Length: 263
Image 1: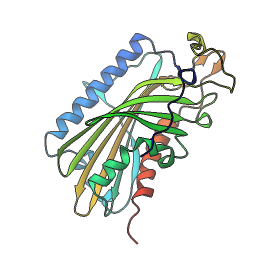
Image 2: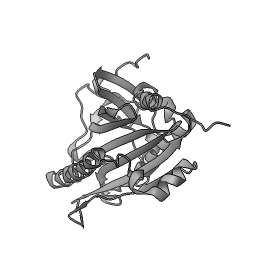
Image 3: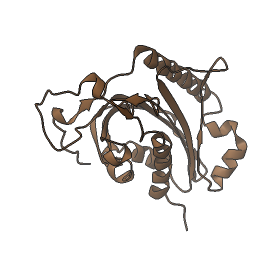
Image 4: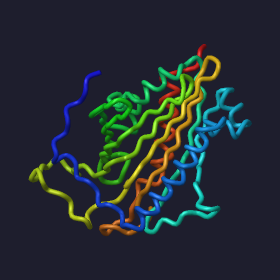
C-alpha cells in the first residue's frame, strides 16, 4: 500500500486553539462519552444497537441511518463557552462482510481519498506501531468557505475477541492550509486573529460486530468548532454547520459502497 509524499511544513498552518474553557468543556464531553462506551463494552451491550432492538431490526433489514446524540453530565447539557459540539451516530449492517475486512478498510487511511472522494481530498498513513495508527486527512476547500483543512489523527485498534472490534480515532492537530497558491516563508504562520476555527477537534469511534454472515458497524463522531454564526475576522463563520453530519453519512455510505448487499 504505497504512501503519499509528505507535504512540506509550509503546507500546514495550524489553527488557533480554542480558549481553555472551551477545551475543558470538550475534554469533559470526551471523558464522559468514552467512559460510557467503555462501560458498555465490558458487558453484553457492545453495540448501541444492543440497547435499541427496534433500530437493530431495521439495520438488519438494510436500513442504515445517522442520528444526533448528546452526552449529558449528570442529566444536564454540557455548556461549551464560545464553541459548539456536534455528536452523531451512524449505523449500518453489511451483509456477507467480515469483521476483518471491514476493520482493514477503515484502517486503510491512504485510501480515504478514494473511499470518501467528496469529503477527503488527500490522505495518507504516516506511521503504524502495533495497533496504533497515525494518519493525515485533508478536507477540501469546497467543504468550507475559505480554506481546506488538514487533520492529523491517531487511532487505536482494540479487539476484545474474534467477533468484535473497536477503533478510536482522535484528532491530534487540525489546521488551515494556505488560502492561495502563493508560497511564503517556510515558518510563516497565520496570526491568531486570522484563523477561522471551523474545526478544532474531531473524534471518531467505530464498533464492529460479526453477526451470522454479516457485520453490524456503528460510528460515533463528535466535533468541536467555533460557534456557527459568530463574527470572526470581519466575517460570519459559515460553511461548517453541516460538515460533521455529512462526514458521518459519508462514512456509512462509503462502507455501503465497499460492501454492497448481495444481489
